[in-house]
Amino acid sequence: MPDLQVQIFGTKKSSATRAAERFFKERKVKIHFVDLKERPIARGELQRFVQKFGLNDLLDMEGKAYEQSNLAYLRTTEDGIIARIIDAPDLLKLPLVRGGKVLAVGDDPESWKQMVEQT
Image 1 (cartoon, helix red, strand yellow):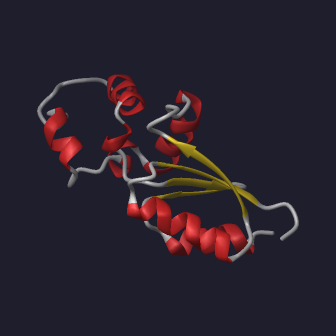
Image 2 (cartoon, helix red, strand yellow):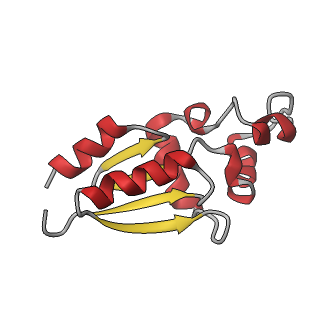
Image 3 (cartoon, rainbow, N blue to C red):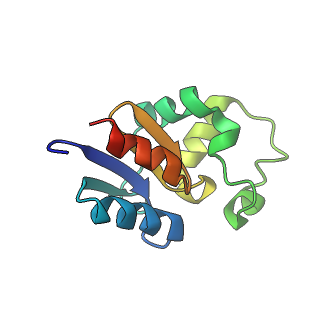
């Protein structure tokens, strides 16, 4: 695994984000962590995940932030929702993980294994 590096987008408070970090650290994979509370995800990066999973699969519809955002009741465009996600990362199922060409959303050890195995 000489040059595998994963990018983890999440928050320090998110237990699933910490689980992803632990998973990759145990396998000695280099991690580039982006704390979405300090630095918003780039629109193009977020778009990659939207294209693969669809916007609804990225949203944490069970979370408090989603409930408080009233997104369920708003009539808005996909771009409008993406803009809100960039401003409020708590709306996302965290973490978003990218390793090579493999993308994962939320607590997804199966996809994380694929990232490690692709090298």
